[in-house]
Image 1: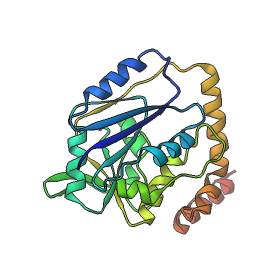
Image 2 (image 1 turned 90 degrees about the vertical axis):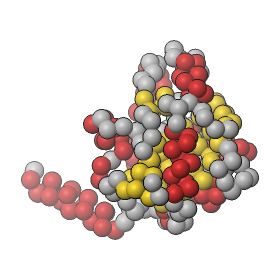
Image 3 (image 1 turned 60 degrees about the vertical axis):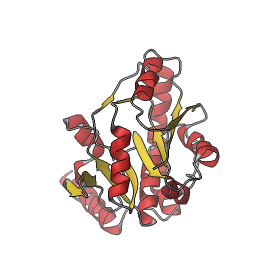
Length: 241
């Protein structure tokens, strides 16, 4: 792999600990890296789409990363990502393992993952079909990111389905996704203001209302078996009322 291009969309530039976090991220780099911290006030998806059109590397062996601003990775995560891509040419999306705590297990989704397996000496935990890695840190082969392309823009500042859209699109294109064993990553909690939190909550509610249609429009809707299970669960719940 030749180099990393890392994009961090954020609106927290003025928050306490933001500068400290960026320094921690920079200190974790062990390979050639371009870091782009982008103003995300127009929304995460529009910001990521602009980055994709202007910053995606031309080299097929480059690694394109979108990362949240609340991660503190340790040195070695980039090397782990490179090893994963080298071990499996069909891997299109990789994330360093986010940890074994109950909170991280719930975040990653235990039902989304196959057991750990070793491929060419690298420990990987593959995603099941149509599952996706949450958007905290998504490392793409640049070829995969180019094929996935821009995401649909809904007008929301905070689209809850943007990571699902990208992960499912990569899967539909024939790419695999996996976590790779790596040094630990810490997620920090920012002290966000009430205006932002209220906007985020409203966008989450709006996003849930349109999620199925947005994914369906791109041919990325839930498999029929999932939809039938949810329908049966709802019907059973009504029957108990």
